[in-house]
Structure formats: structure tokens, C-alpha cells
Length: 372
View (tube, rainbow, N blue to C red):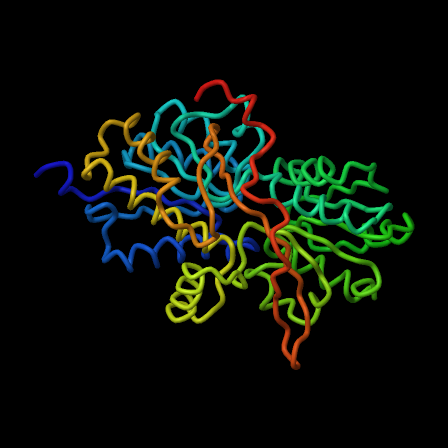
């Protein structure tokens, strides 16, 4: 049997249990939807997907990467989890040279000195959405902004990204534990700081808890709340009215009106009976990216360097649901970042697009990347 006729083996890892399971499941469902639409093939090769749950634990994520590389001998890895999990498994992936495509992270170390030719993010460099919101908040003239995030790599990246484009000193910075459920103490600190706005990054279940408690404290609607990865497709079903009035930045939302996105959103809702999140969009795009890359090699992915080069080139060729997309020299996305607002319209809670905040935006770490 020729290589091109053998199944393409994909290792897909994400948090699939616990409070962040919805984030991981959307990545899996997005990837599988694209695979189903391609009749179970990518680039003309049948596909076998090996799925693993990293439990949002770095040590588990590192074990999964070793299993994918050493035991399963996968052709490519997709997912790679939250930034702390991504970083824990990065050395194994870089040393092996296996093509790896992150669908939920772009940590600053991996975008800079730790970049590698075989490691890509089809999602975002972590700072990007926060940079867009920082610029937006600055344009609105807010002077006393409190910044909040979980205390791990992505939380620090988001806060730094916001500050880079906001440019003024924040009123305060509050870092909380990953997975924290009670934010009453921090909400009291926000009030004590006499803030005129709040910027937060709380993905998944953390976002649901924070926004509900912020709303229950009577602050939403009185104190402007700007966010990234907090109010989105994974949290809106639980938040609904509690999110009205919030403004957020992202590279994608179901509200985007591009033709590719309308087709994707309609197909996802028909298949899974729910609105997709940005994590579903990146999972979907990862499969479509691989489809183009494998096709460029006529299905032969045995040369890992050639496979990585094909993925890089495919970034400029596949049609992303988010609009313009290509890889920067450090394998992080060049893409638009948009602003969105949750509003009540005709008795319904809906998300409205507020335009492009940063166009074809490049991250701030590419100059530090010397290995590509």
C-alpha cells in the first residue's frame, strides 16, 4: 500500500472533562464537521483521529504529546490545549518535528524565541484579541481600567496585550487562580479602585461565573466591561441576559457575515444543535488547512520538513471562516480582530459586529523568532 493510501493519523488533544470541557468539545466538533464534509478524508487520504483529554493539566498534556509521538506515531497533532498545557508538551513536539497545529493557544514564548518550523497556531497569538480591545478602550477615553485574568501564561499574555495598545497605566491588575469559581473578593476590589471600566479574560466556566457575579453585583450596565474569550459561543447559552451590554474583541464570532462563515455556522447548528464558538471555528479551520497541505504533497507526509512547509503555504491558500488569514514568519496568524457587543433587540439577546479593530494584525514577537 502506498503512503498516500494509508490513513492519515491525527492526534487531537483538548480539555474534554471538567469546567472547560465545552471549550475542548467545540474544537473536536469543529474538526469533525470539516472532516465529515470532506467525506472522512484530508488531502485525498482517509483519516484516523486519536482523541485525548488533557484535563487542563500540564502534566497530562505532556504525557499525551509523548504518546502521540512515540507510541501512536501520528502524522500531525491538532489542539494542544490551553497555553499552560501547550507549553508543557512543546519540547516533545519540537524535538520530534511532527507537524502540530494549536487550535486554542499562541503563547508568547512559542511566538518568540521558542518558535519552531513545525509548530503552528491556527487560532491566535494570545495577545491579539486583547491588543484590539486595548486600542478600543483607549479610543473611548477610559482612564481607570482594572485588568483581571487567571494567573497562567495566557492570562499574562492577555493583560500584556491589552496594556501594549491601551498605553496608559491601569488602575489595578488582579490575577486569580485557574478554575476559580468565586470572584466576590475581586469584585469588591474593583469597586474600591473606583474603576471607570474593567477588562477581563476568563474562558469557559470561569467566564460564566465571573460575568454572572459581576451582573449580580449590579455592575454590568453601570461599569463598562470589556473582555476577550469570556463572553463567546461557549458561555452565551449560560449567560444570555447577564451578558447584555458587554463588549468583546475576537478574531471570529458567529455574528460575522462572510459567506464561508454563514455556511459554517449553519452547518454546525444543523449538525450539533447549538451555536459554534471560536474554538469550533479554529477546529474547523485546522482540518481545512490540513486538507490543502496534504493535497499539496499528493498525500505523502513522510517528510516532516516538507509537510511543515506545506502547512505554512496552505495558510495563505485555504479559505478561513474568519476572513483574511495567513501565517506570519513565526507561524502565528496574520488576521483581523473584530469588536462585538451583546445587545437586546426585539426581545432577543443577540451579538452585533462592531467592525474591524485591527486589520491583518501581526503579533509583537515575530522579531524574536530566529529558528524559522
